[in-house]
Amino acid sequence: MSAKWPKVKLGEVLRPISRVEPVDILKEYALIGVRLNGKGAFLREVINGTKTSAKTLYRVTTGDFIYSRLFAWRGAFDVIENNLDGCFVSGEFPTFIPIEKSINPYFLLYWFHLPETLDRVNQDCSGSTPLTRNRFKEQFFLELKIPLPPLSEQQRIVARIEELAAKIEEARSLNHQAAEEVESFCRSVITGDKKSKPTAMSELVRLRQPDVVVQPQESYQFAGVYCFGRGVFRGGTKTGMEFAYPRLTRLRTGDFLYPKLMAWEGAFGVVPEECNGLVVSTEFPVFEVDEAQVFPEVLDTYFRMPAVWVDFSGASTGTNVRRRRLNPKDFLAYRFPLPSRTTQDRLRKARVHADALKRLRSASADELDSLLPSILDKAFKGEL
Image (cartoon, rainbow, N blue to C red; front, side):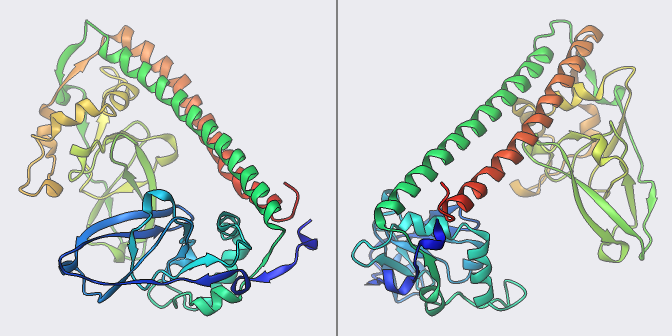
């Protein structure tokens, strides 16, 4: 049990390492960063010595333990892997190596995944916002006490955690693969209909006018649309004083919408039940679907296909690639391959099963996400 493991200050098992390299304007430097929430170190950019104001950089090697002073409170810790060996960091990334192999760097890394460990880091980084929060100084880092079993036990625990983490990732991958196969089948139902009829969207949907007059003191729950065919989602709540739009549009289940600015990146969607009654700004054209002509599920499936988004890259106007806008007039002129009613009925039934699988997948994903924290908790209690 961890109660029997001695608690050891990190300063007793780690020592700082600084492999200083004066910046040479004739050399290139591969700079790394450390992602938040335990997502690890990554190659940020490769720069010429003329592109940095730093006089010195610091080389890291495989097995180094590293963290971001500025974002330690957000879990920005990692161990340098082989692919980043020989890269460089600024002085904002303290680097450490074990003293006489007294601690496994990955054992330490998993310890920094524990909520209680990050709570302690937070206490040493005062300030209520990222802008006012203090950097996590090395003196605080080295004073932290970790429950430390013998090195052989550390290695066993690390191997067990990685074995279980790999199984979790495999389950997550299979979950995703199953959902993709169902989506692929739904798409094939549409694309395989030889009797589909090219039909202008203006014959299938009607552009709704904004129907909410904004009141400064009222609160409004917004919706948004993800890019790349990921659908409609619940956004944040704002009061009328926090935005400039005089009118909004209230969504209804089954409406079709898109943001003018991001439609060319696949930001189309049909309003799901959980977004019924939310609002969007006038930057989101909202259409009522004529279900006598086409089911909302058909539009939702079709407009999630990447091959379709290409059709709107030309219709979206703007000189800057990030400022293209899809005018409702152009969208309504788009000729949609309207499937036969038989095909639409078949797709609607398929979507029932697909949506059920999506809900199951979401629940499974939540369960999978909770497994690793549970595993880590047991590991550092000596129960793994």
